[in-house]
Length: 203
Image (cartoon, rainbow, N blue to C red; front, side):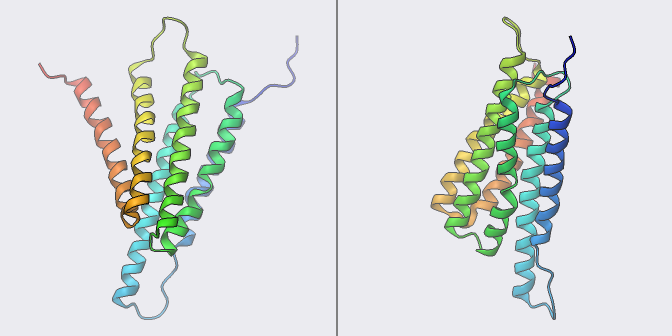
């Protein structure tokens, strides 16, 4: 039997990487180049724009990292994952928009809420994709490897943290960027701590 038509994981990964590359690149274009003599307020505004860009870049880069883990070469992909992945990428593409809104509005409540909602939606879709891939590949009585458990736990943690982003955006929207930076740092530090604990457990 000849199989002519089949979903291709390679093409799914290729277009996903392309989307991530474009999103990571275009965000820097929103930073306005200063013209004329620089005042203190102009420098401060420029630093705010750069900080917003760096936080958003780190957020998108984090999603790319988990995306490449999700579509590892050994995983069989359920058919529905292709639709979920497109929805996921469409939300990733919204990050430059909400980043620019956040930057231009000086973190107003509306822009902070929009940013937090997009991040939460991406995190929920990401968790859903991880869950589907695990369910499609894990045989009965089989357990995830320690690496896969760690990745899955981190993805769950990101959903919880995005709930905190929503809470901050509704109550103290001007702190949303600091909260996201703290969330990124917390996830990285927690992951490293757990890895070190696993390698050198306490006696």
